[in-house]
Image (cartoon, rainbow, N blue to C red; front, side):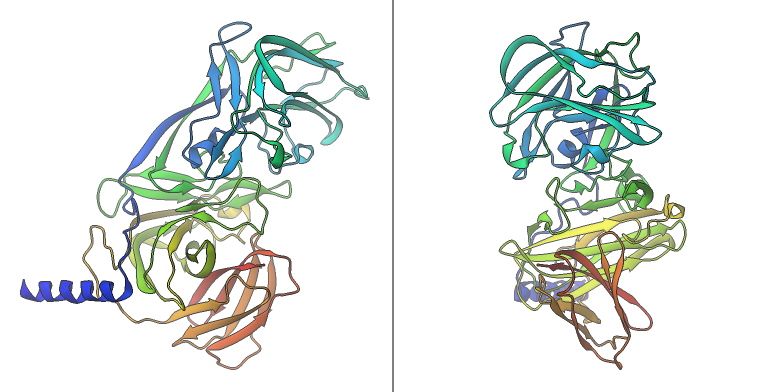
Length: 482
């Protein structure tokens, strides 16, 4: 017992020397929130997934304040984590802020002349709610139409739109959606904008699309489990969970986190997309140059992230973990490693020694590499449990800090030139990838150096990933090019 007390004393002395930080909230994944989300039947995407991710109330809901029948659909714009989130639903997975780039929809071969319905609203200028209808023939858009709403209408008000110019031919599919704010113009969106919609139909035709559900009488529900204090990085066709699930296959306790690679989309092509989760989040509609927000206080300059994992990859992909350190809202350093196949739970450590003291940290995991887009990678399954810094353990013992090899990149963020330092290692190869998985830089033209400088100033601003090879292991770091 005295020996164990001595070890504890030494460990806590080291913590005091480096500054004590709080433990990773819910790092053992024992606390989960289960919420049921509803959307109008046959509408496969809605902003409730983003609302859930940002821990705000669902903003597309079934309303009993109906013009016809029992139900209508109500959409409300909310502010979450400083980002404005409009209430939206649509019958396809939107892949960008430009609806003209979307594909899919309901089968429909009639040629309508317009659209009509009823609405209530409370939308402050210059914000506008909207209803959109896009028609396609053999994958080519042949007509796009929209009607916009503003002001306050406390009683149901009819609306109608004549399609001009008229559809040139009969379509084969139609995309339909609506929203409480014009998400194509973020500066105009207003918190609290509300649009209540009911009894919508196409005009000048003898029948509606079979799946249209324009009176919003039928709804579909999805039960979502979300780990407390973590953010789901939604994307692709897994629009609610982001490939993140609760599992009872845990290393300790009753539950752990499971990340599964699913079918997403990139440039209108189906791709594998890793299940992702993080203690931070990215603002909605951000491009490659946005920085991850959030995290929690952390001030240890020297520490070790430790966790348990098991991994069943589909194909030759790897899981990935990244730690991002910040000071005064700016990224100052990061550390990351690939996770390889393991049939049983395996203990893993990421030691780090930072060049300056941080004030916060974010931690993220994903079930396959960002560059591994082949559909053969779909199904890769990563389970994570007992995530903690050694300075603040969870259910495991306090471990003595080991001064292992570490890799640092600085400055980060950078305006172009970066230095890569590998303490105790000899760098044998470096590759740089964009967030889309495109290799933009590669070199092995140096001789057994532990410090290497490369210049990325000719590339676009944004987030990149640097892979460093030492002949035996691969180290992955995230950088921001400003």
